[in-house]
Image 1 (cartoon, rainbow, N blue to C red):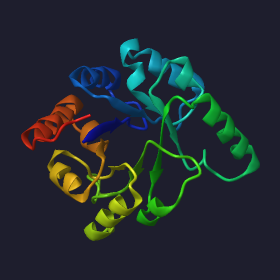
Image 2 (image 1 turned 135 degrees about the vertical axis):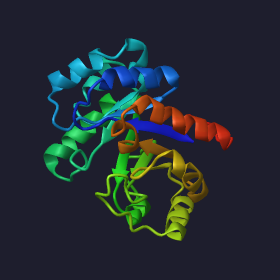
Image 3 (image 1 turned 120 degrees about the vertical axis):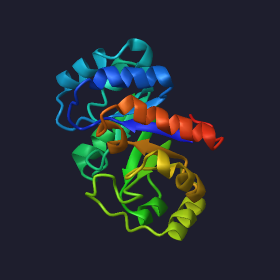
Image 4 (image 1 turned 180 degrees about the horizontal axis):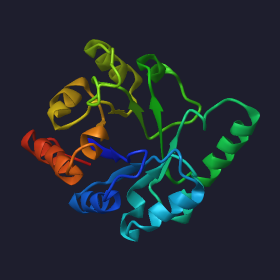
Amino acid sequence: MKVVVISPSKIKEEEINNLVKMFEAGLETYHLRKPKFSTKLLQEYIEKIPKQFHNRIIIHSHHNLARKYNLQGVHYTKKHLERNLRNWWREKMLRISTSSFIKTSSHGKLASLYDEEEMKFDYVFLSPIFDTITGKYQSGYYEDSIKLALQKTGKKVIARGGVDATRIEKIKELGFYGMALYSSVWDKENPVEEYLKVLQRCKELDIPVE
């Protein structure tokens, strides 16, 4: 089971310290998503993280920083993949410059998993899978439909939305490649403790974590 943590969109108190503790506890992949950050602010954020953990970070914006800081990969948003000439050229250049990096993307509809992307991603997010913890979104997916889509497409899909330690068995049962932690970690008083609960539950279920 791949367990990833997605950053809060806005800075949280003690965020970097908590992140480093999660890295030290075994976190292998951190999706750095700060949509309002300039290149300079994102650089400053990355530079606060010890260098030995840089290769565990996937950035959602300012992809040119991936090579500069030897990051793990880049995430392509809808904006990156828009079909106009400017973005087509930018995407083409990004493919060349990030060819050695892990590439990920997101889906908000189950049917879109069946689309044949021009670019092949190492894995994709599908959300929201469960009624989210914040109550902001409703999933609307049927279990049989999810299982069928995951089996037929053969894609590595990570469940996002309403995911916490109590959902691990269901995520495994549905056939997901992994799970993404967001609100279940960052909206709690002790984010590291919440992350460790996930690792402990996977251990109890004899599910290897990557």
